[in-house]
Image (cartoon, rainbow, N blue to C red; front, top):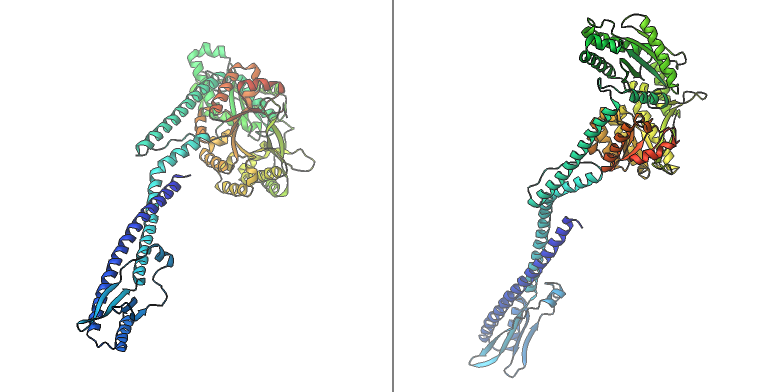
Length: 637
C-alpha cells in the first residue's frame, strides 16, 4: 500500500477518533445546558402562570380558557392542574408529531428536565397544583443541528488535512521517488545520478545510490578503456593507427560476403617507395612521420563515406576499402587528390616519387585472393605510368547504374506495391541448440526474374532520396504481420537516417501501440555507426521502444568501442559484435582476449552478446567459452 493511501487511512482514523470524542463531549455538554434551560423555563412558566390563575375567579370555564390560551401560545408538552386531593381539574397535552430530530437521535440522547410546579391560590385557600413541562423538540432540533455542523467541520477538516498532507508527503517523498526511479533505471541497465535531497535520511540513501552508480560507471569506463587499448594493440598498426593487415582483411571479407554494404564496391591499393630505402634516405623517425601523415590522410578520406576503412597491409603498402563509390575511378581520384593536396607538398622535396595507387571493383562473393591479385596488377600498371599516378580497373560485370529518378520510382513503388520482403535468419544460442530470435533481413525485388537486392544495394540510394523512413516503417509492418501468425521473436534493423526522423518515431510509436501483444517479441537494432552519429535520437528512440515492451540492440558493434561508455545509460538488451572480430577468431589470440573482456563487461550490466558472421558451427564452442550468448552467420543458417 502506498504512503499516500496509508496517510489517508491514518487521517481518517485520527479524525474519526477526534470527532467521536469531540462529539460525545459536545453533545453531553449541550444536553446538560439544554436540560438546565428547560428546567429553568419550566419553573418560571409554572410560577408565572400560577400567579396569573390565582388572581382570576375560580370559575372552571375561566380557568380552562386561561390554561388553553397559555398552552396554545407557548411550546409545552403538557399543562395540568390537580386539586389538593389529587384530582385532575384541567389538563392540556401536546398530541402533534415530533419533528425536531430523528427518532434514533432522540432515543440515544434523552433530555430529562423536571416539570415546573407552582400552587394556585383561591384567596388564602389552596385551589390546586399547577404542573407543566416545556416542549423538548426545539432543544433536540438545536442539539441535532449542532451535531451536524460539528460533523461537517470535521469532514471538511479531514479533507483539508488529507490534501495538505498528500501535498506535503509528495514533496517529502519526491526524492524517494527519484531514488526508486534510479533503482528501476539500474535494473534496466541505465546508470543515472540524482540530486541529494535535504531530508537527512533520504540524503544518505540518495548519496549511497549515487556512489554505487558512480562506482559502476567507473568500473565500466575503466574496463572499456582497458579493452580499447587491447583492441588497438591487436587490430591497429602501431605506427599509423590504421587497421592492421589481418583486421583490414577481415573487413574486406565481410564486404565480400556480408549484406551490410552494397553488392559491389572498390578496393584501393597505395604503395610508397621501398621502406628500407626510405629509412636509409630519411631516417627511421622521419620515415615513421611520413607513414603517419599518409595514414592520417587515408583515414580522413573516409569522412562522409560510410563503411570506408583504411589499413596498412605491409611495410610501405596501404589499402582502402571503399564500398560507397560508384566506380573505381572515382575512388582512385578522390584518394589521390587528397594525397597530392595534403601530403605531397610536405614531402615532395625529399620524396618526389611518393606513391603509386590502383583501384579495382569487387563483387559480392568474389574470391579474396583473386581480388588482391587484380589490385596488384593494376598497381604495377600505375607504377609504370610515373610518380604519384593512379590506375583504375572497372569490372564489366558490375551492375549497371540506375538513375536517381528511376531509383525514386522503384523505391516508392516498393513501399506500397509489395516489392519489399523479409528473409529470416536464425540467431542461435551459444550452444547452437535453440534460437534466440530470428533476424528479419530486408530484400527488394526489382523484377520477377532477378535476384532480390539486399539492403546494402539500395538503402544508400534510399538515404539520398530521403526514403528510408517509409521503407523502415514498411519493414516493421511486415515483421508485425509475421509475428501475428507465427511464434518466436523477430529482430529488425532501422537505418541511421531513420532514427533521426521525429515524424518516423511518432508513427512507429503509434503503430506499436496498436499491437501491444507483439511488442514483447519485437526487437529493434541499429548499426553502431548510426547509433553514435545520431546518439540523442537513438537514446530517445530506445527509451520509447522499451516503454512499449520492445527490446533494443546495437548491430555491428565494436568499431567505435572508445565511445561505448555512452551506451551504459541506454538500457540496451543486446549487442551484435562486428564480424571483423569473429572471422578467423581461432587463429587470433589477441581478439579472443578482447572479446572475452567485452562479454564480461556487457554481462556485468545485463547485456546479451551475439557474434555476427560466424563461418562454421565448429566455432561455437570457442565463442561460448569467451562468453557469447548467441551467434549468427552463414555457417549456422
